[in-house]
Image (cartoon, rainbow, N blue to C red; front, side):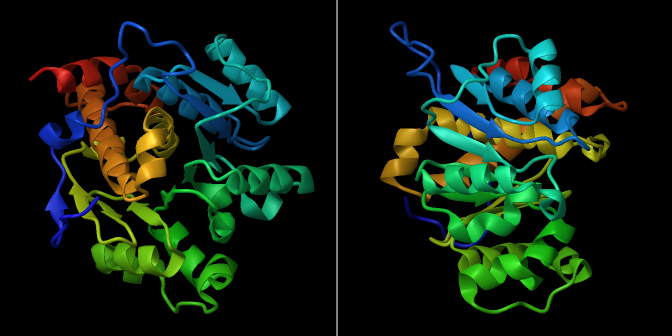
Amino acid sequence: MSGFAGWQAWDDERAREWIAVPGASADKYSRGVLGVRTGSRAYPGAAVLGVEAAMRTGLGMVRYLGPRRATSLVLQRRPEIVTAQGRVQAWLLGSGMDASERSPATLEALEGAFAEGVPVVCDAGALDLVGSHSGPTVITPHYRELAGLLSGAGSCAVSGRRVDVTPADIAADPGEWAVRAADLLGVSVLLKGAVTYVASPGGARLTVTGAPPWLATAGAGDVLGGILGALFATHAAALEADAEACAVLAATAALVHGLAAARASAGGPLVALDVAEAIPATIAALLRP
């Protein structure tokens, strides 16, 4: 994928092309299977929100593999979720996890997912493992997380050096730092904020705007991760053919996220689960010419 020249605003028309609509012969496997390792004892709700958003974005199956309490909550909310291991087309990793509190078993499972070579959406408590990725990967940090990654051990594993940067530095010039992070880490970067910046090592420079300020609420990032994970699973073949598809899928996820938030808000407050529940109607509207 090529043709990027400077920053481009991602819009409904281009995002529409990256929504997978099942055909008459589709089955749950052909529609995409997403593996999810998210949530923790401290933040089990992140797993519920990400899984909910993924299923409502239009894939065939989610395999959730996480802590016992989070698994119970996920199944209470979404009984169709599969909790047995098996083949997946993409992974969503790290939401609701704290890297400093990971168990050896969790670390081993995350590293194993990165090593499979399938597309990965990497969030929160898995960001420091980005150097071990072997397939198309996008990271989804906010300013503080990106500053910690670039100035800490995660960046050393990839580039061999730390970067002297603070959250305030990134907030002052988020587009530039998204580009620098993509180049340093060798992955696509979705930098969350009032304006979402998406950059890739191959030169993609995309912005997404229009989300209501009410979207700045707990769990919103977990919903975004679920949307993006679903898009990765439904476009695994495109990602295998061209890793630059990471960037346009990330921008599409951010756009759907913002549109669903606007629909759920209707001008007033919202909670993250409201956004997830608004995704199907948002996609239906987006698909209408």
